[in-house]
Length: 247
Image (cartoon, rainbow, N blue to C red; front, side, top):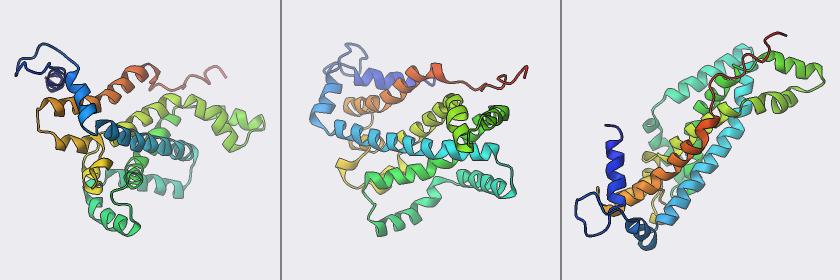
């Protein structure tokens, strides 16, 4: 039942012209036409630019922040962690109006860079929590052994914790990617020029259920499908909790 709407999109997008509503005679003509006669390539590039930039910024910031939350023990840090939890629980719609007023003053409306800033702000709290949760599964004895060998706190993070956190960071990157890639609300509010549209907003241009609209929807689904298909083997939730067994 969950896959039925996706199957309909595939069928309509790959249906050869002239076959009416019959789902046979598969062809790539509709896909080729939306790239040839519309700005689908530009919208795809916009979505990729904003989403990949968001993922990179979130991982660069969330990895060390998650390490501090995972290893630190203080009231100030506990309060900061609680603040992150509160921020991630707030509905996104509550920030639309104040953000729009702020971005008008900063000339960031109708800007892909401005949209990226919004996505980073919306994703960073959850990305930090996810990173911290995975780093909790890495024994602190590994950090301590690195310190005894002369490594600094940052050195232990870079050389020991970070390489062992790749499965968790990949999961965080996947979450951040999907959150940004699938967003419609923020993009439709802050993007005004058709040339700046991302794929979710561009879908409004085409009629619902039309071959062109289904083709653009298929293009929008492709990166997520490829991401899961290529990256699922690297995901792990168990961590390396047994690394210190026998010490």
